[in-house]
Length: 328
Image 1 (spheres, rainbow, N blue to C red):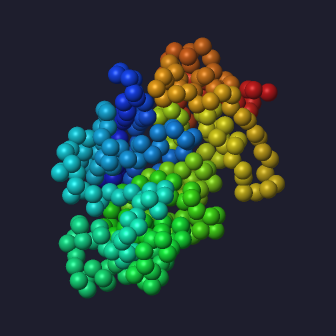
Image 2: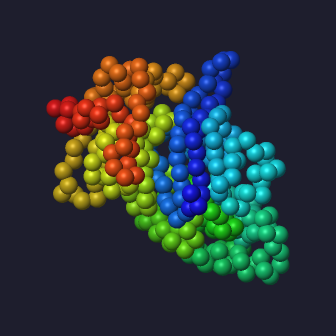
Image 3: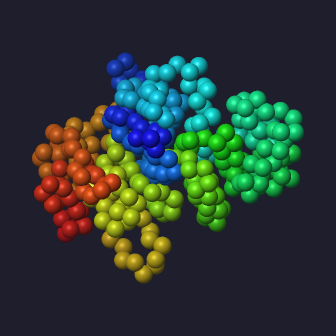
């Protein structure tokens, strides 16, 4: 469809793990779509494959298999010299702004860098655009002659966002962009990102482990477990009645903004399995309180719950997929 900016089908990414024949199975058959002006939130525990997906769809790392299409073009196996001209249309904001920026460069030069690389801007034109970008992310132009060590974490993240939007990209991947920031600063960054999305209609992939942050900015939410999307839904559905037992467990660990809201706490047994030795069948069955024998051997198919909402759980067909109801 014309408004689909990025799509991935059966995306797989494995990394060698020491001995020959051993691999870290970071991403295991992921399908996703990001549309123009849409924010797809991606949530899951550490090690679930969120960041690897973000880097792989931008071709910062090569996929092991599957298909990636950007703006209608298959970029799965494009060589780096063919990907390079497309970089201006796909940008990334990383979690740690301190390590993402060259500490020896001035802020003005850091913001101007993508303008010089992709648009060959020089002189007063480049200076004017750099100042405009600084103002757009609510950063004083007085900072342009300073180096990163003179700025706070929130200010540096604004510099990273200014760099990302400098080329008017169609897609921005945001990998935990607020997790290292104070709550008050985090709110300002989220508000800025929403404004940029509304103005530019760029598609966002917003990666986070924090459900509160995901709720504020996302349109759709994909829940990841061991490199697989176990549920995807409009954001309201995750906070009303998620269908996958893992999504329910994530929600039960989330502190609601309303102090009067009743908490239905549920703690999962065990630890997330090693991605080197993936479980057979459903990847969640070893920790799932409603798992049945079928879950140990068969990978569950996606069950359509409602428009824009699917979950991969064998117990949905039996109406026994709710851990709070079935574990009493």
